[in-house]
Amino acid sequence: FSSPTPAAQKKQRPAKTGSGKAKPQGLKKVFSVAGKVMTALVLVLVLMMILLVVNSRRNRESPSIFGYQYYVVYTGSMKGTNPDSFDAGSLIFVKKIDPAQVKVGDIITFDRANEDAKLTTHRVIKINKNAQGKLSFITKGDANAGPDDAPVTQDIVRGVVAGSVPKIGKFILFAQTKAGMVYFVYVPAGAIVLYEVYIFSNDWFARKKAKGKPGGDGSD
Image (cartoon, rainbow, N blue to C red):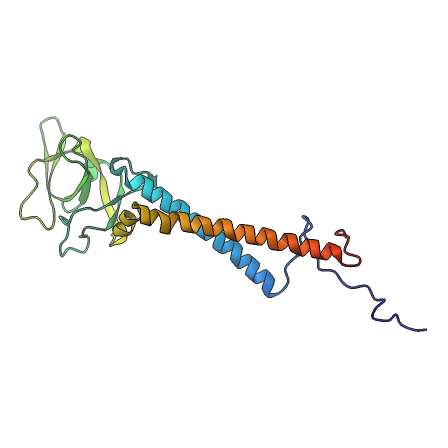
């Protein structure tokens, strides 16, 4: 008997997914997965940036993330030599705490709404308790020569600083500007849209080309 000629042999078509899209093979599959991962990461970063920008504008109403609130430091009053000191431009993370658990040496964030335009974050150097058992805290900035003018009552304490990241606050402040919004929000968001359009159009042309070939009826 004679074997079928190569021309008569049925060409093997690429495997297809349930949606009818050809499954990428080899490096194409790797690039496809990597592209999806990068798209997801960029989308998460864009959403986080929008959250940071929007909420850092409302310093008094910072949202709680995993039990911590974040604030941008605007002044250098906490610049010092202590391991937990921080300078202007830092991003601090504040954890809500029972004022009774505050200790001397802790850095607290408090809100004198009728005096200060923004929240204040200073170190506790002394704790007082009145006859009714109400606490008040004497605070001082690490860079300041003396303590703050007025004690901090327990009812205006927002929480204790749990950590800080230097300079990232400057990045957030820049992101609030028009140029920052373009670079860190609009450009990444536009890149995601363009990437998805590219993937869709590339897949559409590939399926159209496959259907135009002999035996390419688009079904299995």
